[in-house]
Amino acid sequence: MGNKGRIMTLQHIDNDTLGLFVKATSLSAASMPDDNGMSTTLYDEILDHLASCDECRDQVSIITTLQDEWPNIRHQSNLTEDQQQMICDYIDGLLDTCEAGKVRALIDGQPDAMKAALHYQGHVDLMANELSKKDIMNQPVYSAKLSQSSFVSALSSFAGQFFSMRSPMVYTMAATAAIFVAALFLIQTPMMQRSQTVIASFQDDPTIQFTAKNKLPGVGFFTQSGSTSKPFDDVRVELITQNTIKISWPKVDGAELYKMRIQVFNQGKKTVLRESSSRTNHMTFLLEPEPEKSKAGNKVDNKVDKRYEWVLFGNTADDRMFYASGGFVVGQENRDYDTW
Image 1 (cartoon, rainbow, N blue to C red):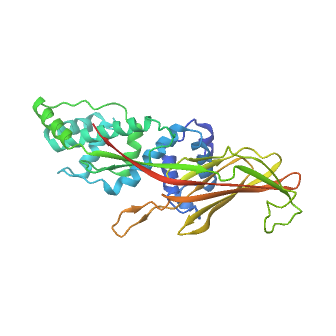
Image 2 (image 1 turned 60 degrees about the horizontal axis):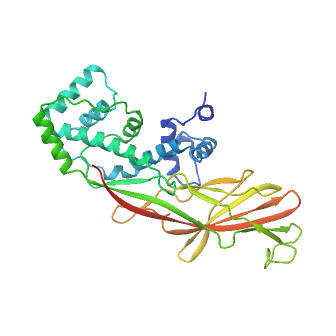
Image 3 (image 1 turned 45 degrees about the vertical axis):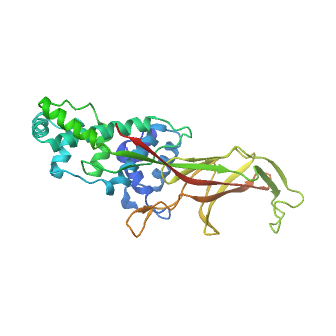
């Protein structure tokens, strides 16, 4: 059974597919290369699933977090990368009896190994706890910046291991070594800054306007005589992944096809960012491609602190045209949390 069948038959999307989705989302919406392992159809199916599945959205958030913060994670001990990976696998219950024994001996004999194990276990637990706390705006957490770190592992393995963690680690070491390393870990525990992407929507004129098709558009198209309007204020704009929004609106009676245009205000100019059509009363859009890097090498989130406008229009079965518009602003809110 292909990916499409798997998405349709399982309650949740598997982590490998979500990983491909995160990779595809980081690309420009103008193209969806086949060598990414994900078709446009499958990508759209996942977006629809994420719009209604909190658990899968949380998993995407974690994978995105790890991907975004990977360049900031640096190892600060004498362990080799293979040793670090073995410690992560041990905590996740992925090793056989022989390999697990070797890792236990390593942890017993090296304070750096114990510190790395404690940090990895603590980081996994912390991320799980943070994502279980729903924000009052029901927006997922998208980045967690660690000022210090004492372990490193392969990113793709780390993401998969996070979701497959089975049980806490059972430490077998001398009591004095445990006390020393635990104290060292607590003293050097970093602060976690949760950067939360938030979205605020608005409508200056919460109405939808209709006019006959035979009235050609011109100056004052929807204000000319013969046009009608009705309340249209239940439009929702939601952030479902780091760069993706879902817009839903009330059904328009007799609508044959909905068309939605997303425009962005940038340096005093308004440009069309995305445009799409649908027979359903909701659509998803990628706001911006992968964040650009500043001269200092830091990522610049080019979607934040911008004003966007949505325009909904289309035709009805009784030869009328409809039009509604509104906007939203994407911002970022930072909060510091102690990790212990």
